[in-house]
Each structure stands twice: as C-alpha cells, then as structure tokens.
Image (cartoon, rainbow, N blue to C red; front, side, top):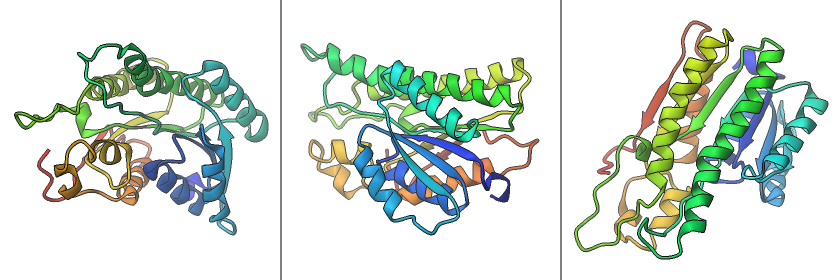
Length: 254
C-alpha cells in the first residue's frame, strides 16, 4: 500500500458497512479519502474515530443520483487535492418491491439511477481526472454475487430479487466495458469488480431478513473481508489487473 500513501480516494456510499470499512482501511494506509454520502453526519462519526491515522477522511455530502451534486463534489475534490487516484463505487440500494407490483416505477428508477447511472457518472468524472494527469489510477466497483446469478426462491415464499440483480448484472457488464474503453484511451488506469455474497450489516442482509427468516441464519462475510479484497486488488504490480473477485462466506448456499 506504500504506493497509495498521500494519494486521493473517492468512496461512494461511505456511511454503509462496506463503505465505512473501506474508508477506515484506506485512511490507515495514508490515503486522503473523500467519502461521498447522503448522510454526512454518519461519515463525520467515522472520521472522529480516525484521528491520528496517517491519512484523512473528508465527509462530502452528495447524492450520486444527482449529477449536479456529483459534479460539485468532484469540483471540490479537484480544487482541494488536485485530482482523484482511486474511485470505489460502493453506493447501492435494494428495494422490496416486485417487478410486477403496481405503482413500482419510482422504486425501479431509483434502483437503476443509483446502482447504474450514478456509478457511471462517478466513473466518468474520475477517469477524466486520472487521464488529465496520466495517473496510474484504479476504479473499483463493489458488485454482488447477484451480478452473476439470480438465486432461486423457495416455492411459496416472496421473491426478493426485484430490480437488484438486473442492476448488478449491469455492473458486471459495465466493468468490462470500462476496461475496454480504458484500453482504447491508452491509459494506465485499472478497473476491478468485487462481488461479495451476504455481508453482515450490509443492505442485502438487512433489507431481506425481515421478509425471509432464513437470511438470519445464513453465513455472512464481514465488511472488513470486502475491504481486504479491495486492498489486494489495488496493490498488484502495474502489469497485473484483477478484473473480478467473487467472495462468499464458507458454507453459503445462495
């Protein structure tokens, strides 16, 4: 991680379990982390616990579904730090509505705007910053096992998939499309997708356990496990790109 000391990271969805763990690890390794989140107060609480660490955590209030807010946040980061070296697209949502539910249009659009469009806008602006400085940057998309397989529903129980797997399948495709574009642009920037299974206290486990008792008893990863995978991906040599990591807790049966 010595190569990242003093460099700048942007983490979206930074107040969540995985996002918070990633912010902590990056700050501990000397990075200046700009944490984008709708709830700035939650990031401030994490920041307070990191005083004395080699790096620094900055709370930047931003809803990534609002392009003007994203552009404003990136402008502040550019003005303050001069550019972005690492982007972690962690922000994501899941709703409980079915694809066939009446009046679900708002939820469907919110999922796509957060999990796909917001991710693309943040990535576009980060790559612009990296390319201008010819930086050896890295884009990391926090994906999901649901971006590779739609799990089966127990007959007679309510399906819990909805729009979420579709949005994560899109992230899998987007990651490869970005890789190809980076090759075309002749930049040294890398891109990685990390697809965890159930993670304790993350959105997938917390949003589904009230509807499916089985989720409570399923094995789960810790947020720090996902952060450890990210640290591995961003510390490979220049000629090595970790394109996809799938992490499951031992004994998972999704």
